Image 1 (cartoon, rainbow, N blue to C red):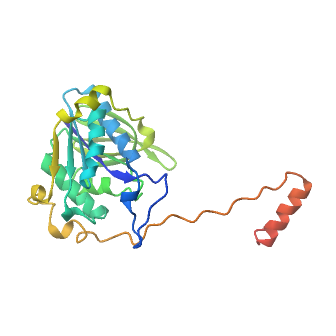
Image 2: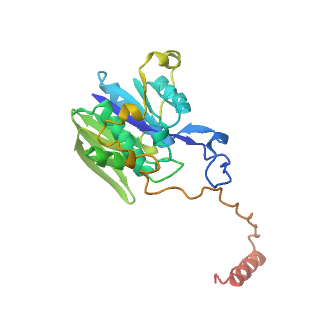
Image 3: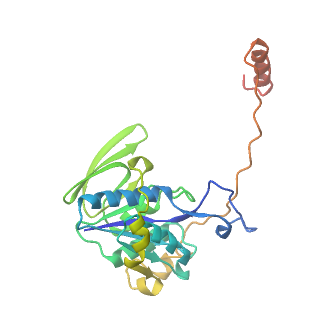
Length: 266
């Protein structure tokens, strides 16, 4: 049994967004972090592994070589194996091409009847929530999104799924894919033994040559060529003007009414 978790290294958007002259993000000038929702996905896999000691947690990411540092952290958290999908041929991929590549990488790892694939709900740099569901579609397996609770009974998963106005409980047989939200759990920390021994765990790099024979990996379906969409421009939104405090008394009420009337709000 394998729990395969797709993770992404993203710019820390809590700080200032660095933008190049061409309007694209300058990732070299921004701190990189593990996508928060993906940490919940990793924790979901590790939690299920706690109840299934024979299971293996495999973390997979697509990105440049420095993303290896993120995978080392996840190995130190308790993951058993890490895979970095990296190559110039994969550069410029949108969500469609990214899901194509990750689906090909997962196929290369191998999907068995009792395997589960986990993804975060969405990445904070794109906020599309598209890659996880697209991976499931391309692998031809069931998917359950927005998971707030997961129970496993053999080859059946019962998932509490969050809706805008409530919850939905869904059961699915493995193999399947689940996208996780932050309300699902609290990610664990790296352990001392994990930090000291992460380099003893299997670590692989899948480049284009490794994956090119996978049916999903074709030159016109990956990278910039295989991307029907692209980001035209990224920028920091302008700061809002500071607010103005109005006294909570009779004169303040009159002043507020005058301001609202002047702006044609009332």
